[in-house]
Length: 332
Ligand code: NAX
Image 1 (tube, rainbow, N blue to C red):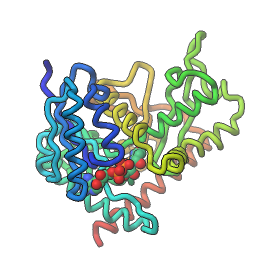
Image 2 (cartoon, rainbow, N blue to C red):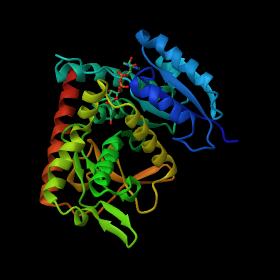
Image 3 (cartoon, protein in one colour):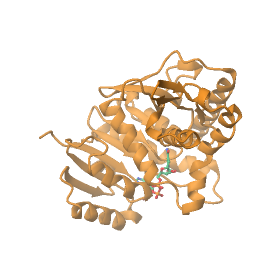
């Protein structure tokens, strides 16, 4: 049997936490033969519900689950973890300014960065889910300089999966036959879901989505808004934000990163820009990536038309502003 992998989940008593722990413990994230130990972190006011999550995990008798540490102590939580899924953060409460939310989260991510840097396993891979996801990842990178920057990523896979689902619905094909959409940019309403390179597999081979969807206006307008606003639609309908789809996307993100993307398929991940596609280096930006043996690479050489260029730059501009705001919070 393989050695267990230690997985940290912050904000584990929350909405997404409750949805993701059974997925991980059942092997949906790391594969059916990979045992794990879960480190669940939350804050003091949530300690009782955190304990309940631990109890329910025990009561599920998951064969792959070799241990659960439920704690409100950041140091204990980060000790020797190989994977960190960061969902803990300060939510935007009605009436709060963007700046105030940013300040709260910058403080949290700075502290957790230091703890990961000191106590996590050397090869620890980090996925930031909590919003503002890209900028939280940037702060974490700043304050955990010894973690290789390619090990710090943020979640845009939910947006990617939502885009696949919308296209499958439009074309009345199974979602599994659609691939290679791209979500560029920030996990926010400026994200740009791009269908220019997306394909559908048919009996006669792969076909471009933009050849099958004849209404290009739909691809440029309704489709984009639908994907950008999907989170808000779920929130309205459920009166709580997306949880099972977010948890599933986080599992997809880690699984593909660890085990590799299928041949000929790319996925969207928020990663540190190296200047590819003219995106300023240093921003954490969502790109199309392929993964192999635990590392990701940005897909190069895709043709970018004028429409895409503008949308990609808009989202980069928003991220640069968030970065400035985050730094002004740090210096305040
Ligand atoms: P919840 O508010 O249900 O859970 C958040 C949990 O974090 C709470 O249990 C809270 O006590 C805990 N927490 C707060 N401060 C903490 C700290 N310093 N250390 C550890 N834990 C802390 O939110 P939930 O619906 O689970 O969403 C979690 C985060 O994911 C939110 O920031 C949300 O905005 C973000 N999302 C990001 C998505 C993405 O695609 N990147 C999609 C889903 C989700 O909206």
